[in-house]
Image (tube, rainbow, N blue to C red; front, top):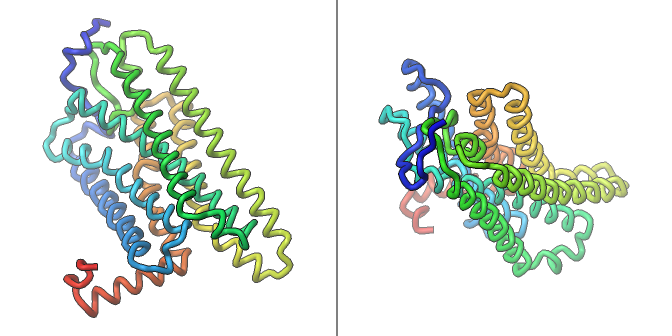
Length: 319
């Protein structure tokens, strides 16, 4: 295939889900609805945690950060896709594609790290309740967040810089709705051995470390819960981590499902459709999982709604 010098590349084409014009309005409406639900749902979680002093604890500190990351995660891909559908233009600039890829990898890694940190928080709360406030102090919470951001940013930066070194072919069509790194590397005409090696190394290392941390935490949690004599005590202990466990299962099952389905079908369009599960559906469902299963969040949201109804939006905005 004829190659193009990477400095002359001006844009890629995001093919999306379908090229049939009659279903584009349906796709636009569906993804706009999911995006708005995701943004408003996660903003409500952040507002509930920040406005209620009872929720100023490590658990809800990490939850509000997860909600912020989920908003950024979906905002990295969906607005550009909606704009392209509305403008009937599939183009994305070369620089825009690299930036989108950088932030997508960043927020995926942050999601992964935050779920692991939240599992550790639940482990300390259930297995060492008397020392919880001593162990999970504000400095440690801040350090855990800092390490998560630094590790995610470094991984994303390295992979983005490696893609920048590639030369691309004349076929610059990405069969996806965003600049997914594997799809971009497959378009390259230059040698992609080191890109592939680092991608699988980073995915394996981060995936193994985070999943091992989560499994270890929950193995200790289950062991501790089994040692509780009363059924009520067991239920109360389990209920404190049920929402987080649901989020972990949703994130890892959908992510694993994407890569298994893409490997089985070898179809880029099937991979794009499957990736909707963890790029859009999972961030959208997280607020529902926590608001429906968590009494503290439900009470905080009820107070916000009551305040809005009785005092009006102006007073709410001042808070």
